[in-house]
Image (cartoon, rainbow, N blue to C red; front, top):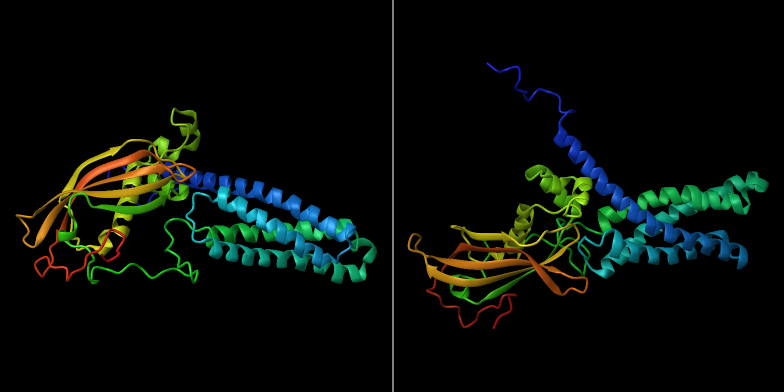
Length: 357
């Protein structure tokens, strides 16, 4: 029999404080993005509006031509601001791809503005020219209704398709399309136990800390206040939200899988020997991962496998891409299969980046 003091699964979730915190944190993230996007948009708006009025009424170009030129200039400024500020923490998927999609969606936003302006000038203006064929009416149509509708469309499309979050599939720089998933365990491994000699190092690439992902992880698995409460964290010695150490360790694991385990004869791990969080991690940080083999020996318990001891670390990169402070250090062991032909490599071996030697 259930006690009346114990809530059951049929109870309302409206009073769940965790749900409220998640909604509040999500709204806070969105509002910060909107704020930055708005500042960039404000600068672009001044360029767009000033350029339009100069071209339209000083140079005396047509309304559609003036708007096309002013929007094109403003869009270039907007791309730089959004790429390197609003969504600077999101991974870069190639300048050509981003720039192309950015201008495609800007062209659609421009079309929205042109439709508003065209409706004002060529539909309403034909019937009431004294009212709608004036500088004020044209600006309300193009820089009022057209601007608002176009801006809403641009924000959504940039966030959804241009500046991709870290969890999005990798993009082929030649086609701009998502790459096929990494090959599974059925592929022939590049690295067996024999290749994993002490001193060998692996570059695990650069991982960018996405704020949305960081907060979602903390809300679900480690909801301590300095991970989920922006106001309280900002007022504390932390100076703002810091990532859960387990989130950082999970990102390291993903980099290890992507860069090593998917290409190695890997089986499982007998355990973690040491893990240290040596500095706080924050949204927007760029962490370079490195892995080094420190020891190995054939497994006595599992014939055909070898036990490899590995040291790993995440290092924060500065604004110039130079390594700074380590934020994560760990030592662990993994089981790797031995070559079925007794360790022969047919005269070739591979470096850590896959090149044959």
